[in-house]
Image (cartoon, rainbow, N blue to C red; front, side):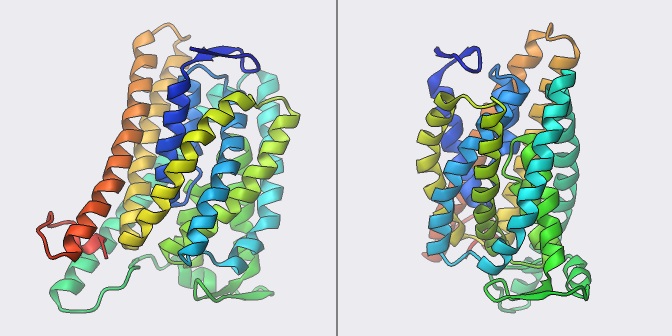
Length: 353
């Protein structure tokens, strides 16, 4: 057990390193900071809600730099889109941090954080799961018909609606192959920035679906572009949380040690799969994180007297990260086997390249 003086708790070092490594893999793969998993996890490990938010935000900033460099090498970043979101992201983060400080003053930060996490993550899980299953079926049908299948297939009609909004200035995002009003991109930045500042996350778990389903970027481009935003939102959020006294740097350093390696693995894994595979992982990570947050919320609402709820929350949080990492690594193994003409499960070919 290590004594985290600033946070005022004791926790095992290996748990923080493990969380950083596993969330690094998941985050590098689906383009998120992983805060929607890490913040509840830190609360499960005993960190106060406001401290969990600040530690997670600071760790996300460091990990985002590593993932961004790797995705830039893979050609997955649209800089026009990323830089257009920066102003909105900064404004949103500032509003989110102030909102957290307000609830901290009321003594409700932990409860409000968990309730908000549950509602947002479950909603996104439903939409992402439904759309991705449709895309999966479409790929299978195209393969049966002998049609060529690219890396990205999606069935949402929302991008056409938002791309037709005529508000100037209109920007051309060449890498993403999207022409759209800059105000749509800025609005995505503001909304996700508020969530980033309030929940202590990079905002990627809502920004990636927004870039895919509203802006119309491919999943791979959304992943890489979002990680650029995470560097900005994470960096600014880390500064603001540090000013408010919400960061224990020892905890941050242990998490980054694990994340540096995990982020490399997750980023490289994206080159082996199609867009729907990334969205499947995002969807599953959301519902698993929701279950963990619900258990922790139940523990808090029962006055922290039912220890079994806390134990189940810890087990689910750790199990969730292990499951997602194994799922991602399995997809890479299946992709390699498929390329060599070896047998793979029937559901795999539509998801890998």
